Image (cartoon, rainbow, N blue to C red; front, side, top):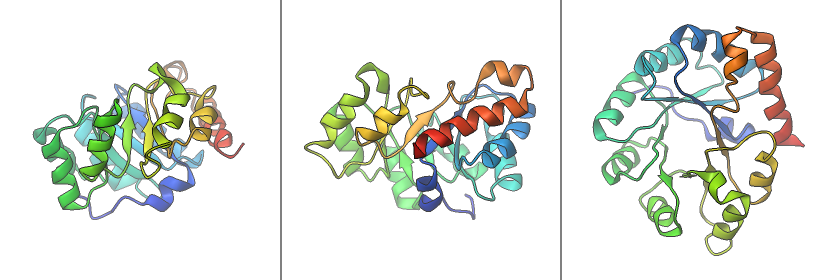
Length: 212
């Protein structure tokens, strides 16, 4: 487990969880400093990415200053053990696995489990989730966040799936506490072209949108 703990203060400064999925180790090494320089603070490396545990280890050893580094797509206790062993500071899951959630709560590791219906979301929250990942978020859109918050305003919600520049303000306005953004943030074309300056400018657009 990591000596370095998840910082809520850092997350709240720029409440976006950037999702790294199927990006090569070589590119991740280049991307992380750019990500931080652009003003982003929280990154999740999915466990179904080749070399995910090495990436998490590398990120913690080399880029942890000013960055929260976590593991995503954690579905089983085995995934969780590997992620924590690599040093993940927070855990994101696409589903509710009670064992995984309870284990994180016991260890004081923030966990953001994925849920969709009001009952699932409330159950995840009562198990001790730091935030509940609403996935897939665009199926029902920002209005769904607003509807959930009306009777259950204590919930902290992290819509994920299809969130991008054009709809992120609407999600935040509807009451989202943060946003999980993958492919729209880590632009495949810019990464393939190794256009690091372009990628930094792209990242900055997301940061600017938060304050607009």
